[in-house]
Length: 535
View 1: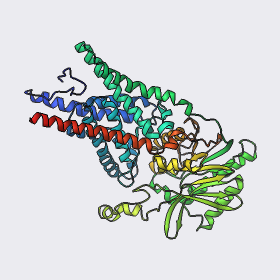
View 2: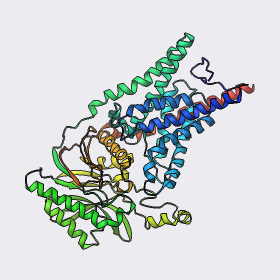
View 3: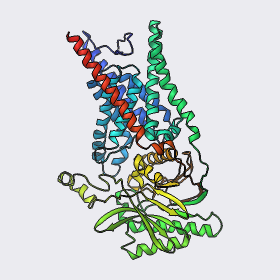
View 4: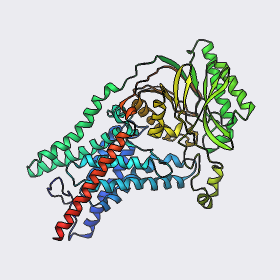
């Protein structure tokens, strides 16, 4: 590849002229391969691996691929980056239903990354381009979290940083600020290396450009260190002893649901086993118990036998239980958390608000049914959405409910905290996805949420991995996968709000406006350049 010394606002790559065909193909294939491989590198930075720092070279290589190119080239290279990242990240979506839905999801979601690639290429010619480019990435994530079908934020850069040095920034401005810092640092790393190579080759130093590059690396790191005082696991409102029950399922896969009574019995049995250990003095008595999503897919309001099983378990442990049920009310289905008192029975409910497309409801049902009737058979009836935040008062503690898929969405978690939650529970059901990486990816989201809102987060899961997470994001206890187990721990209650909680969506809006400003500047500069060339 022929490279020439250029200014910060010019391309580092010249278009090939009068070169042999093989060399032309090489100049096209190398950036394409680098784009796909850098996307793969970003995937490797995500859980269950703890290689969070690989996100930095991933974005550095992505910057090398895009800087100075046309927006059309950026579109294609961005799409390859998106495929390299999302194909392995989301492979779990096809574990039980085959590759069709997985590939369709990736093909659609990668379009957002392609548009980001076009935007990054456009702003890469501007002074201070890493800032504009990192904001463009966050704007792409913001769009992906909202459309289509109310969005799919899985794979936000922030969710790969649960073990990273940048994590405290989640408490400053949530996942947008955390993700922005990581991407900015990666782009800044490329800029520092590029200018160092240029200086060594030409002997000239562009001080302003070098300062920008160094600041883009240093500011996110310094900001993360400065934000550490926001991260604390100290109790503000006392402590409670919590039990999280993982009852397990008869078998993994989609047909676990056909064993609904067995799943309910497993969770009741594990709760009764825990009660026996408490009575024997082996385990501290919990103040309340948390069951996972789908722990009672038999509606206990309509089925006396299911109600009796839950009642028996609640009386055995002698404290309130949050039960995950599927409930039909007025002809509508709800994915519901039910607060079950050992003396009074069900006394409060929370209906899941952010329901999963193609899992809990089927968009475009008529169209999809014409293509594949098996899919409509699997989702016979759409779930309905809840409308109110869910905060249960359990033995005096206010517990915010965020059901499974909801943990990926910023607004669902924040709404529970602003509604008074002193801790958060993320009841989940991952049995459908077997032993894939999905459960670890989701667990990392809960760790980020713990720091974002400075709350203890418990994650009771039907089949694993269940966990106790402190407000500083550290996991103190966790279970294995596909085992029956229970976790009991004294955890802190907190009521103060982080800047991220107070600011809500404002940091994301600010970064989207920065991206829009950069894109507007780039488009304007391009138009002025064309007019000058026509004169």
